Length: 129
Image (cartoon, rainbow, N blue to C red; front, side, top):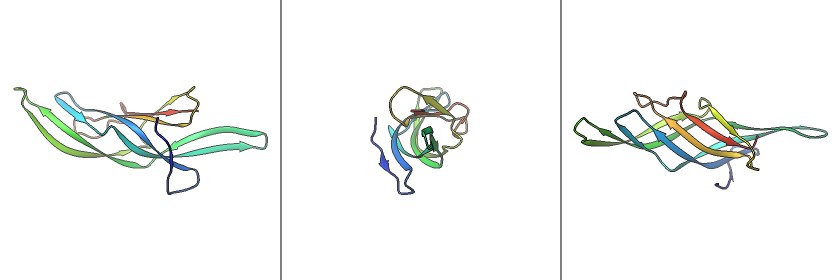
């Protein structure tokens, strides 16, 4: 698990390193970075009797570089360096509980046949609420 560092945007804003897994169309291999930094906000809903709820809010756009390898019918390969913009607000969130921390865990990115993010298959794992 990575350590948090305070982001430059506000008192409740943070940034953490998130593991990345990338997948592409068949006959292509996609090799992305091991991790990227993702900013998030911790929103605490407090009452006079204590904390009612804690939410992790993730949004913004990040750029993820990747190496695309194409294999043709003769098993020849060609490589190209690319990058893709990911709108984190559109990535479905997968909530995990029981870890004892509030943080982001991993980002799974699927690319469609046009090498755009397939938001229906991609996911961002969150811990702690």
